[in-house]
Length: 103
Image (cartoon, rainbow, N blue to C red; front, side, top):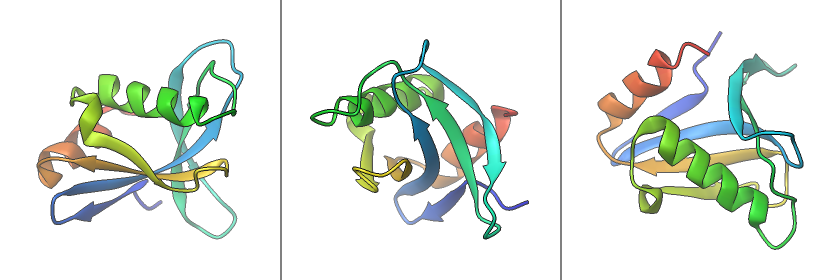
């Protein structure tokens, strides 16, 4: 199984499948799609209107990984369930934090 992220020069790109309108905000684990790509499953309480679910996802990822909210942004898939979330920081440390989640 491949990792649900890609290391970049100034951070990582995290691949996420987001489910809005959930009962709680949480990361649920890694899932592999039919094409073989892995992504992190996430749920947020926010509705998918006016970017509310994307902002909730950014806050959830920042809190979980212990980085400032300003370091996290949705860079692809703004209106899709499958998103790419860019996290700016030390790539190796961020990769270790994602892997340490044990999801």
